[in-house]
Length: 365
Image (cartoon, rainbow, N blue to C red; front, side, top):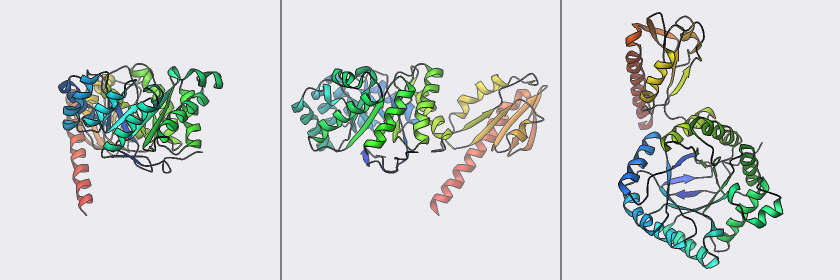
């Protein structure tokens, strides 16, 4: 099994370390008009609250590049400029505070244009991410490799990297993406064997909330479990905040990082005598506001629920108009079904506060 995460080069995206054993970072992208700084900053703040650590903004024109100044000055996150075709946009975004660039050196306008962008990146101390996407590979690469497979993605990425290295630039991050999960996985494995530049992971054009999250979890999760990947984005046709939520679910499932609440809930069956799905739907948005890494349980059976979820810090189980609140498998109170969610959230918030207090005391010691 490949394990390259501790061996990749270290770059800095603003204040965020990437590569060489740094924690895998969660990234998303705004879908606001970058030329509207207020709307863009509002979305960046929402992303940050959800746990996003790096954010990318599109730069379609010079007006958007100029808007980077107020955005980067007020943003709680390092802001990456996404630029295509025009080197002037990349330079302007850097001059206005972009922490990093995402460009395709092959379409930025030739060697002189690449040098212009690299010189600006050096002056700003900003790394550059280059990407190879299966839907936009160079024709000569497609011909040599027989189509947009893993080898073609790697060859295209190597070509992009060479263009930067020829300008004496090595603060580089690389992404290799396909809408095919299997192609993405194999391409990233091949890159990890051939290069020590850090990787940004993602399954491109993954789809809507359910399908996209599943495809991303399979593709990104498989690579993270193998020690591949330094940053990643779950690309969804949905509110970007949902991308961040999905990303943290992936990190928790892989055992890499903990943030927020992990919910254990049973799938319901004929024995269920409580509106479990309704309880879960009401609880999820409240639980999403809690940053402490707790495990909570929402169970449908009073008899078996506390035992099946005894590792949860807090849980509820109900049936026949009443329910119980339990902690670590021990029942701590019985309540009417109408009060079950409120009492459950009180105990969850108490557990979160206790975690925060203990964590703060440990940090001071």
